[in-house]
Length: 96
Image 1 (cartoon, rainbow, N blue to C red):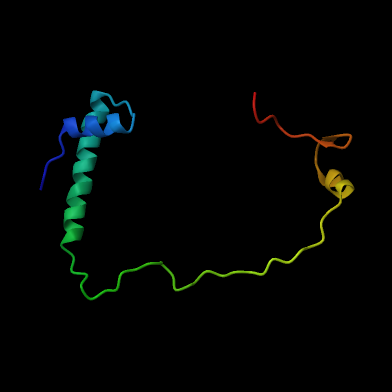
Image 2: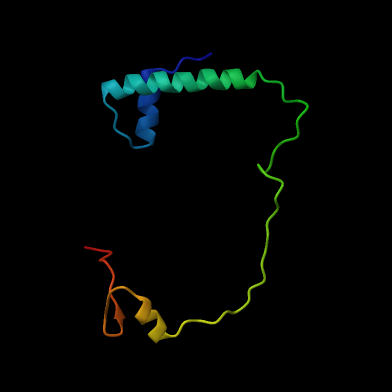
């Protein structure tokens, strides 16, 4: 099994525009090596008797017909809104 080097982790971090210090570099090198070792174990499993799985459940897509429903009028919407100023609905600021 190929060993993951610190240089490889540096390169991956650079490609991902992630800065890593020496402590993190050591940690990520060990973690990636562990992931590769686990993948090596998974590769040894015989799955020849199994169909490829496309979905984790047997459920297929369910489509519903679009039907128009009764809409609230402006007065009902304004009456149900917690904070308002006249006919305007007041919300928390999105941009500061």
